[in-house]
Image: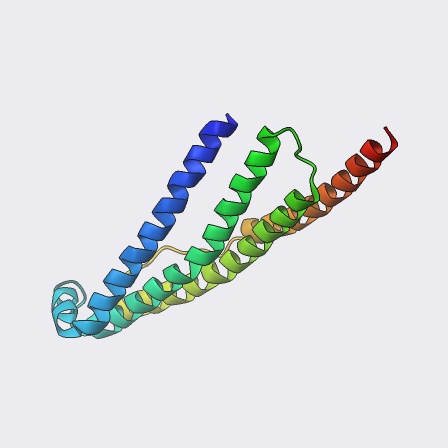
Length: 166
């Protein structure tokens, strides 16, 4: 199961950077060729096409802001999987990794708020509802991850203490 999870995370890591490339490419087209994109958007949004284009650029920027924390999360979890496979899950390094995952999730919660703001702006500009909803779940996950990091730190200290007495 750990090998499969590791492979999935490696695939998601590659897809994360591919998404970053697509966001940059799409934002570049929206910025460099505004007349072309405004023309395309006018078919769907009429006189609100320029506002829709600007909101889409903002959403691409928000998407780019998500790439580094997602990278940190995936890399740290992969490293944790490797230590678990090696038979030493309660290492202080894993506690640090879990804390980094918590900080990455914390950053993603703010990215999500930014996405929500741009989604509302795009909805106002176009008259079409862009789906976004505030959720407490991610914020609770952040707290849980910080607590688990502390539990891992205590577990690592206890394991070191036991190994020192044996």
